[in-house]
Amino acid sequence: MLMDFDLAGTVYTASTWILPVLIAITFHEAAHGFVAWQLGDDTAYQQGRVTFNPLRHVDMWGTIIVPGLLLLSPAPFLFGWAKPVPVAFHRLRRPRSGMVKVAAAGPAINLALAFVSALLINVASIFPEQFAFWLTLNLEHSVLINLLLAVFNMLPLPPLDGGRVAVGLLPKFLALPLARLDRYGLLIVIGGVFLLPMLGDAIGVDLNVFYWLIWRPIQMILPFFWALGGVG
Image (tube, rainbow, N blue to C red; front, side):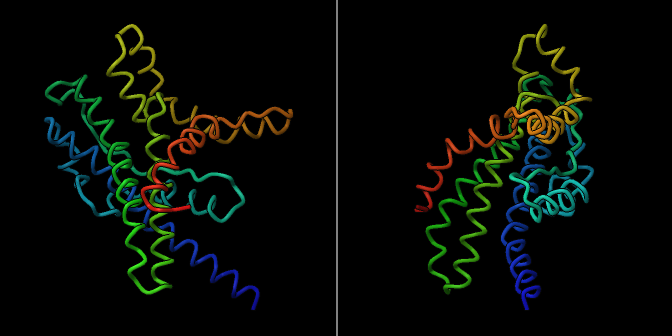
């Protein structure tokens, strides 16, 4: 009976995360493709990536397996990724400023989703109690997931969105060296998120970069969103 209870609890918990995650990554990637399409590059549109169909954006490892394992483990954070939307920046009408707009579109839509999710918490109580509780958890998790995606992706390191924005805004003598990090960016991120904390634990030093750069900013802005949703 204990095993059945744990399994039921795990399935219930997963059901309150899956929909927020799928919506967050779908809107994020579709926003990149849509803005690129509007600014002159239809690569993503031609490949069917300007869509709200999550199956077009899901990466088996990054969207399902890795986040699922972290969710079921005692890991203090959630990490994952979707299939990158293909953008030919040279095809944009104004490549440099267009790159900034395309890159910023993903985090911007995540902030908008967090805002809307927080507001919807206020109306969840109109539904029957059990469904209202489940819906509230979904909306609260939507706020967290979307803020996580927005803050994480705005780190100024290519190929993250913040890196693209920085490359587009910085003077060329600074932008070019930063742009060259594109091929190593994800390795640097993974090393910072996973390896540095492990090294810190081994030597007794706090090297939790994820906490400093991502979770701390989220903690600073979360009270605003909880206030919108009436969450204590």
